[in-house]
Image (cartoon, rainbow over all chains, first blue to last red; front, side, top):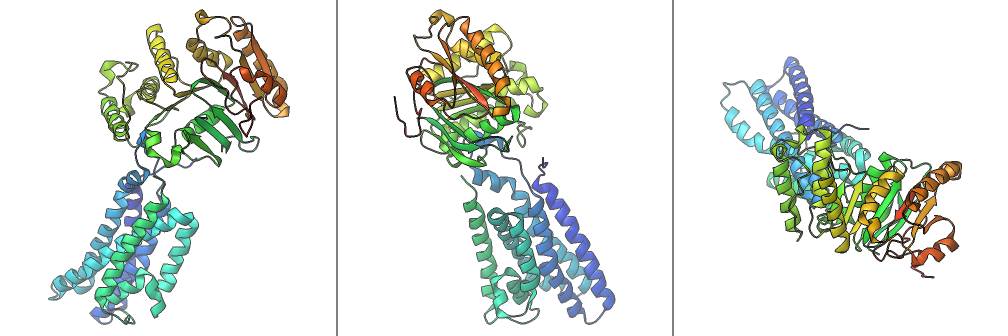
Length: 213
Length: 291
């Protein structure tokens, strides 16, 4: 029988995995050298386009919360699921935000004059990327099970990283557009931020609607 | 029909089991289930915590799994581990359940005192197994306007007073129209819960009706089951001369017994003692045909 493990437990695992991947990748890019902006862009792209989907998939894959005992007494399963998964919903975007800060400080240097401006511009993107992918993965897991998670992860790390317009169906393309990395999408970056909000809302709705009341 | 299991297939023992088909009316039913696993799973399905592998459960026309308001009116007991709320004290958990039931129009009765007063302030996770079971039974019986009460191999309350209180409350619920079902692993337990519902003092013929034991098991264990059934029948027979043993596949016998308190058909892997006193004559045939 599968033991149930709390979302907090899996948040910790996913966070550690993300930290290790980010440290390795950023270290590798730093050693390779090159222009400071290129290193920063590469490390951020790696973090938000590859490490993030992998970490979210791992966390959602592993989470098997026990049924809330109060469900048997009339508690609503959707509300209960939302509360019990709150650690992931808040935690994953926060972890991404923290790792983004680490990457920026590491690659820019603490004395860089543009560091604060870059932080202010990048943090909302990292947090929204984390939030939208968390909800999208939760929805995929709820609808299609682990097969759905795996398929979505593959899509994110392949199509999500591709530089063509069709990639805009996934959050990754919008993240790249907002970071100003790779080919730009044919619309204002503000629309990409709106798209990340829309993914979050749609993912949340699709996830909850699949849970019986 | 108030509680119906329609083609329900359990995960426990799924390979050998055929679908459960049950139609139960208001009243008290003691059901003997083949294994504890099956009993627990069945209870979780009826109280809406889990979905059956196949088939569906309808209580008063609604599916418990899909209907929070209905779940609030179902009292259940299946040795919960209370995972996720073990930090709450029994009092706090009781208050949460009262609040939830109230949200759906349910009324929570005063506790029977099955859990000692000094233990009410202890977190549920720190209660002993026996205390937790007693508290769970308390929760199950705590709904004043329960529609269904399904107890999976409930513990016999310690002490005659507690036993009387529990059985009295079960009787009250049944009399107010609830479907009360107790699953038991032995004939003696089944008889215990039912006997108290209908004490011998009410008459040897149990209101002039007949107890019918419905038996339907796979062929390979039929002989063993026959022995068990005879034991059960004998136990009951001591007080009640009109016990009738019916094999579940024998439709003609079922139809003959319809005037009695039979409410089972095609029941797999269990024996059912349907205790009369209520109108329990629903659905002897799929179409609701009455002989």
